[in-house]
Amino acid sequence: MNPIAMMKLKSLMEKFRNNHPKVPMFFDAVSKNIAEDSVLELTLTTAEGKRICSNIKVSKDDIELMQLLKEQIKIQ
Image (cartoon, rainbow, N blue to C red; front, side, top):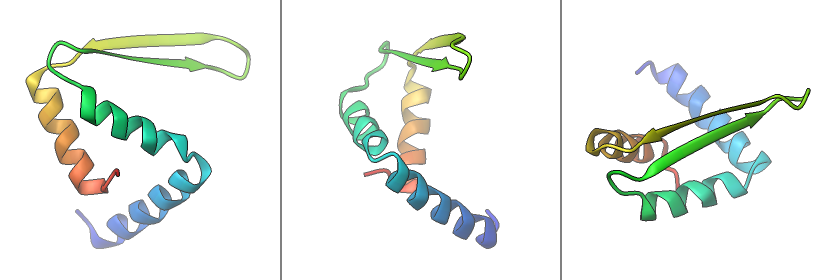
């Protein structure tokens, strides 16, 4: 990955953590409890009140990807 992009990503991640301190705690709890065949659900409620929801059944490959991302962006 481009070193400049990595520096920008690191800065944006620090801002995100400061603005939303509960999100890293949530992902930490998820990473300790997620297993194959778990269901991960995401819901967005727009400013107008519209809800968009989707879910996935977690596979072994998904867990591997999440672990790699966790290591790369150091979610703790």
